[in-house]
Length: 407
Image (cartoon, rainbow, N blue to C red; front, side, top):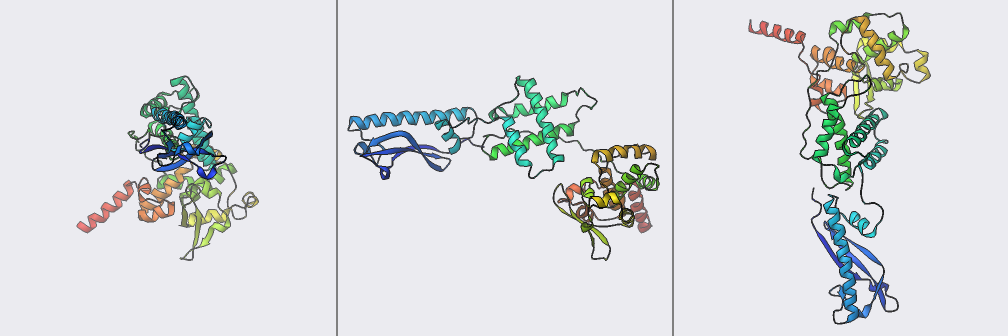
């Protein structure tokens, strides 16, 4: 991003505001094709000493030459402002030049000021569950700056490619003092992605002149997402627990295995979201809270049975929802107990249900990936392809069909 393409200075007398033979002088600026005027405060000249065509004092008089000396000083001051902003890597714009020349506040912007501004703006468009991750990134940035620069904040012009790779190195080498594990590669990338979103915002706001991520390449490691096999899913479905809370969490989990809904979306379901589809069967019609993308999914028989089970549940009815309310943290904690009892060695979280719907329930049973993508609320097929694993059972079935065809 260029700091500037044009920079011009000229002066103009405001003869329309003349009083007692004197009129104010305005400085005209042309920056990046944008034109604007700044009034030279408390400075007026006698009209008879002003050369309108040249935009300066008349050189044939001593008074005119004094005017030109003053204008030269102003011209030098504005150029100094320009050069100082340029040396700091600041955006050269009409706003920054005016602020520097008039001394209106601090023209420098800092990283923490940017983070605060971003979080305030994001409150209206991001859920708290997403916004809290930016707070975690902010804490890491603060620790990094204290470690690297011995200060809690830096100016935005100090954020360059070296800052990015040094922050990456800090995250990779950071050793948590609590029980948490060191950050993996994709965890590091997520913090850098959030930082990039904020620096992109700063560039749009003209708080930064250069993109520090211009030459940076994000490095992702492909990670297989856990899902339940058909046998594991059946084990969970058939298991009856002595504790009511575990049965309820099991029902919620299985319901999402057959609908593909995320935790927050199933918790928001009401009777208004259950409609009669074009096939005469019940469908779930809602919007993904994360992306606001519409989701229309036919309700399979096992999911319908669970819906009917909770139709008259007083805990659900009290909240006007289809299911009793339970925090995501508690649900995932109870799922760990369910996994232990069912002999499942995988890291069972609620999102595994969505993965199971995409793989075991739909794709492995021949549902086209385009249809699965639509039901999951994905806007790109590429997103759904993450779930499109070639399962051994599907390979076996496909090859059996091929043997018959070739036989």
